[in-house]
Image 1 (cartoon, rainbow, N blue to C red):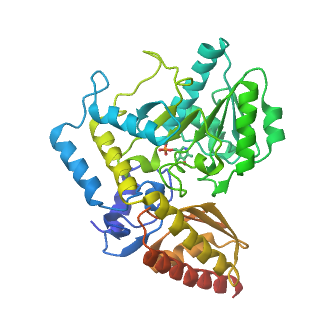
Image 2: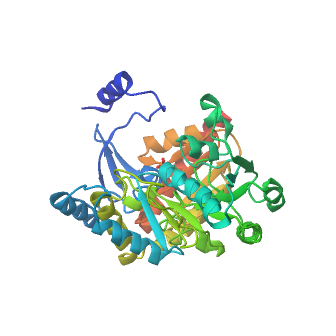
Image 3: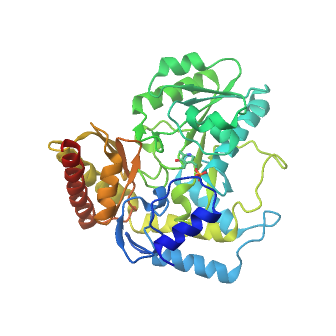
Length: 401
Ligand SMILES: *Cc1c(COP(=O)(O)O)cnc(C)c1O
């Protein structure tokens, strides 16, 4: 099928949830993807920080094929070796002692919210349910995760929201302190807010939040669905500040493209008991085999360091461009970057990039987010920067004329 045919079919039969770019990506290799009409792109979106290993990584592809031949799914009624090994690997790579494996980011967030409420009942002996989150946050689309998301526009059509959530501006410890009351059991933050435009929490703020949570007996939850798994140049973003959470959610990059999420917790916080929580698909053989391969490749290919180095290269390139382009600010860490324009033009920059064969992600009118695969090479970063420079030039001259 052609791009146009697929667009027609989509419009006729699929619910209208988003204005899609009219390119159907049908094949990928490394950092390159091709659409149904044969157009080639350099991929600086990586399926929204999902395809960390790039496309068709031989080790991930082989792990998926091998697992498919053995067994895909059995359910959590039974022991699952791949799930047990994945939980071990995630705990050994992080602060955590225990893991729960699910299927997506929003589901990981739901699990973390339930864990916090159960924790208050079990460890504090009190039915506390309040959770403070940040304005401009994004925690997912299911109802409790949506209630946790500090952006009214996503909630408006779906009220009433589950109760118990309060929102505070990021990087304002006094505001957070004020929002905490007798009924609060947890604080949940993205160490770098992703979907809303790549807004980092300051290290000092996160250390202050950690101290406050200790002081007031609150769980600290990090939503690392986007920032986790080497994306920011550390295995997990919390390593930048050293302010370690009690609970952490993961998803996007974990399966390299196979749907999977995880809730990680310390022994103290891992309070679920039988019948508290579960998932039919969560932690199945296929998804866990994929995630194990992803973790092995991150290790073997040194992708934590690579993400840091390539991120520095890209950020420096963007900063250099800021001198003679409408770039007002460059934000982010590692390969989770965004630049903000001083004028409206993100959509024009995006279109100009597409025409030149580069995928980037515009957010609103002024922000462009870059999330290349962790395997991106130095030469590919230069190539991407070159295209961005041209695209910015075109978008700016259109602005002036
Ligand atoms: C993407 C994202 C989610 C939601 O993940 P889904 O897999 O789309 O449900 C939650 N939290 C953060 C920080 C995210 O970036």
